Image (cartoon, rainbow, N blue to C red; front, side, top):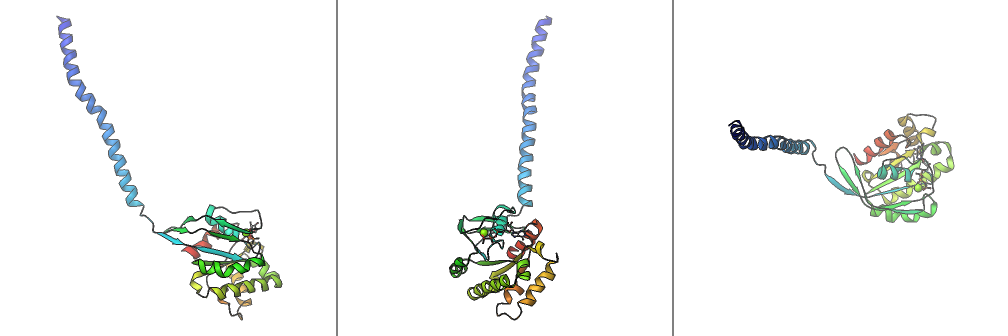
Length: 226
Ligand SMILES: Nc1nc2c(ncn2[C@@H]2O[C@H](COP(=O)(O)OP(=O)(O)OP(=O)(O)O)[C@@H](O)[C@H]2O)c(=O)[nH]1
Ligand SMILES: [Mg+2]
């Protein structure tokens, strides 16, 4: 008799327990799926998609001024301490992301500072949307021959790119100057260049940097890409 009751109870238990167990299994799954969906919705709403803007740049200037350093910061987000003279290196297109925008920067050329590459300036400037002129501000202030060479390049670039809004000048190696004050150094350059027809190259969209410092690069690039 006991055995019969036990069997009945077991059958009842199983009959009732199976749907309950099924529910017990589904509840956490349903909660997990709902949480995942909610998470995705919250993530999408909290991360407004940034506009993607296509552009192109050319980076020009004297030897050892910091052209490759600037491009490496932009492309790989790192400072290149070592120096290897560039000849004429093609780089692939890449993306640079600011707080508000993703820039798709077209493939281009990293050219050396040797005088022989000045013949490429006209084509490079006309083909690219943004023209960036780089010079060593410490050498500019200390060495009159270097200063004259900088002015010659500035004059050439000014000739091919008169629209100042599409042109930027970067004075590198702030760390090698007597001052660490970017405005003081920039003002010295402006004063020395004020009687030049291309004085605008140093008075508008001009940034003094120490590329060894990430913050300095970030400030500079903010002025270029906003
Ligand atoms: N401390 C410091 N070092 C810099 C700065 N800019 C460039 N350098 C260093 O200067 C050296 C020359 O920099 P590059 O970027 O290779 O110069 P470049 O203009 O590409 O030179 P070329 O290819 O010969 O025309 C490298 O050792 C860089 O690390 C700067 O603002 N501060
Ligand atoms: Mg280089």
